[in-house]
Image (cartoon, rainbow, N blue to C red; front, side, top):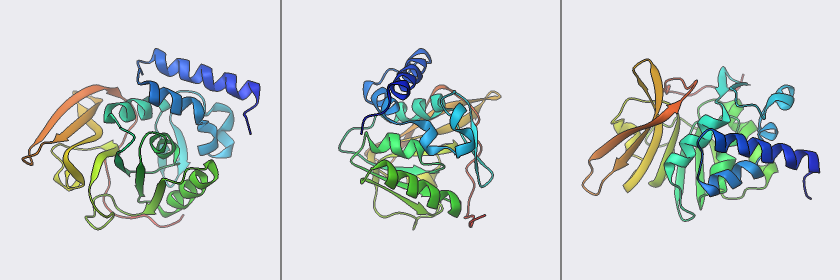
Length: 218
């Protein structure tokens, strides 16, 4: 069923704002336009979900502004054949965007209640190539196999060997780093010889350090 005209207009305006913030990947922009952020946020924030602001999602966690999410996804350079690991499912919003770009998405969420809620939202949204597990992304047993791309919705310290562990040779990992009292997107590449090359990209906001361990339902 098609979205109402008002909702369609709001999504187009939202996408335009993302363009104005520097987003240029057409596939990412289309995914943004097809994915209402309000669907993935707590109901009490539905009326402000289209704003470029962070929102509380429970479990002591916060969903980053959509411009941060989109910039990190764009930095991944996802191809339609890629298998992607996401560390930090949160509300499931970023998972939904990535699921429209990749062949498969495995998302790990340390907070049990958020994992359950994100999985339910993604199922209702209709994506069948994504899965959400209650798991610690720093645990080597959290997922099976290796991935073409890894995205971490948190601050890390390169070279982050426990995260690079997930990558196929030639794969990319995107997270954030703290640099000069600011946060920047970090893109790490694992070359064919096992060496890690890192580059700092654009500025991001409101991400917190990656935490080890699990949280149960609240």
